Image (cartoon, rainbow, N blue to C red; front, top):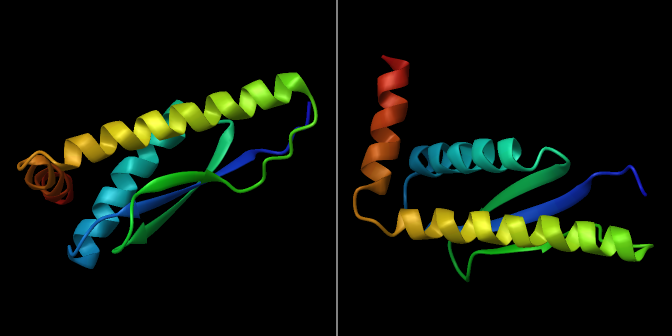
Length: 106
């Protein structure tokens, strides 16, 4: 099996929030996906237009086993993104997230 890491690119539509809020949200999401999928390289790109999505940048698939592995990573990444987006729809999510970062800095 190829030892190169899979590269997943997350395009996250964060709407019209401040740069600091966006940075904190991206950091939180990054920490979550890096913990859950260490064998994958994650790139986060904030966008303000369009739908949030996940794409595989280097699908170097040679064998059926590698195909299943890459597909599994992509499915887990899409699930993580979906859960993250559901959480951000809750009115207090940003307030809790920002509050947790402010408390750490104090």
